[in-house]
Length: 181
Image (tube, rainbow, N blue to C red; front, side, top):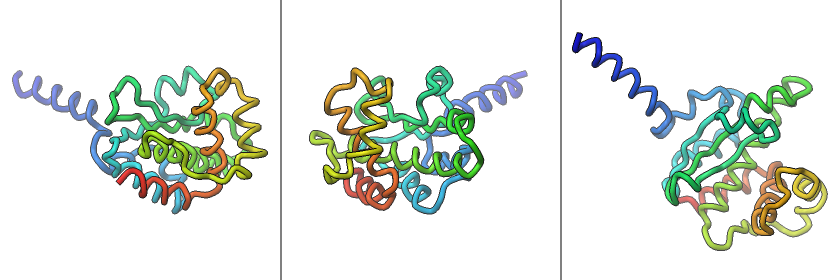
């Protein structure tokens, strides 16, 4: 009986800590859809220790908020730990075909990694994106989408930068490596 209880506890504890080690993110479904730059980015996020990021997929928040493709969250976890979440299910059901799903997964990984770099930078959260890059698509996404309404000016600027950098994975990778290590 003691062996049985030990095995139950072992498997329960193993599941509770399943994604707390470096490299555990590779078990998540979205990873198989990443291109090389996005893989490098997610690996750098995973290795960051300033702060530490728990990489997750399809959290209850994702299911309750279908407008989110991903998010970085750290208020409840403290200043040294953040959740880095990709809402793969939302991205899958909002796609027109598989190739647009794969492209969107990569864009969200890059977008959320821009936030990682901003958080790692601390204080002045700007990554130095040129102002002209914030026009067009980034402005349309931030100023015309309800999830960004009511955000502070700083939060809106952080979102503008993240949207502007979705097509520039190496800028984001360099920013993560520069500010998080």
